[in-house]
Image (cartoon, rainbow, N blue to C red):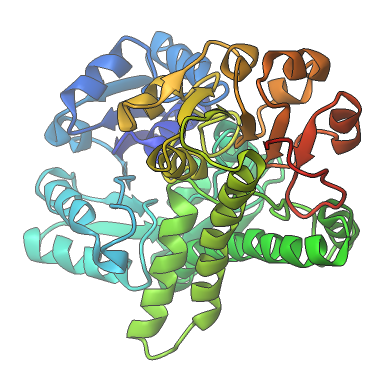
Amino acid sequence: MKVAIIGTGHVGLITGVALASLGHDVIGMDANPERVALLREGTPPFEEPRLRELLQEGMQAGRLSFTDSIKEAVGGTEVVMICVGRPPIGLGDRSLVAVESAVRDIARHAPRGVVVVVKSTVPPGTTARIEQVIRLERPDLEFSIVSSPEFLREGHAIEDTLEPDRIVAGSDSVRGIDTIRRLYAPLLDAGRRLIETDPRSAELSKLASNAFLAMKISYANALAQVAEKAGADVTEVTQIMGADARIGSSFLGAGLGYGGYCLPKDIVTLERVAERLGYDFGLLREATKINDEALESVARKVEEAVWNLEGKRVAVFGLAFKAGTDDIRGAPALGLVRRLLQEGAEVVAWDPMAGELAKAEIPELKLADDPMAAASGAHCVVICTEWPEIRGLDLDELRSQMAYPVVVDGRNVLDGGKASAAGITYHSVGRPGAPAAAAP
């Protein structure tokens, strides 16, 4: 099938390279000519496992191309996928200007019989509004519309696209549903599940899923506060909880809290959608509050460990909001870095992917090429991203590099017993037995 992808951000580009790998002819459109030029060179604008490989394979096979012209992208295609982004928190569910603009352009140039697939995360009712806009713009256009939200994890986005646990197709059009079946036929033939539903339920399912994941993380962080006071180990508690199939172990890691582009935005959007519909979804507000408190709790641990932050050197291990990506949008680490700098600390950070992006956001931040270089002369190390390189650190060497051998593990990555045996004053999240601070 001939597919146009409108928007080549995290969702659009991943979707495009995946569909090209399934044998479809895909053209990706982006309004940013610099991004288009980069993609035409075979260079992805962000890091994601297997993305570069599939991007270059698709282009070499002639199944994947890019343009900054929506007319070129849409003309002659069978399927147009709307993958434009939405602004972060601030405008809530009304931040759909980019979606509306894309829809108007699509309507002007789309061929008769086109199927419009909405993959952007939108509040319930948006698909109906899109249909209305298209009919006003092109009353004569024959088209179908489908809501098909994505459920991708950054760091696993290609895997989640090609091996999804579910594909959602929300439409009142038989032709629209059939198009989704054809589009993903190789995955469905391999046993992947297609869930057919109405557009509003499909739209709400994405917001509901992300908000629920955010609540799971906040629950683990609230539980960590109780565990610390009770002398329990939150990692043991959540392991026991996760063994229950009704609960599951994913998204129960206590630490700095959730970040990224989607979860913070979507939990607020769902709360505002509910409010507009007349329901006070206070549970979501509390999850957001707990998330803010999780970052504050780690910041306090750092302050207590070194006594006064002014003039102290703090090494930060990890800047991306999660391992496997260079995405710093909403990254808790950046919030912590800003807090430490405001208190007068010198902050030196290491991240294998996100360092330069973080420095562009926070020019005062200093970067190191490796963890030991960041830790050299530091009065405290704070672990903010669970990069696998951190688990394998030589703790004896780490201690020898530091001015004060203090580690605040904001992701519970290290073995506390081994850290203590190496002479490190180790503080974690929700685990007992942290020794007294080493600072005077």
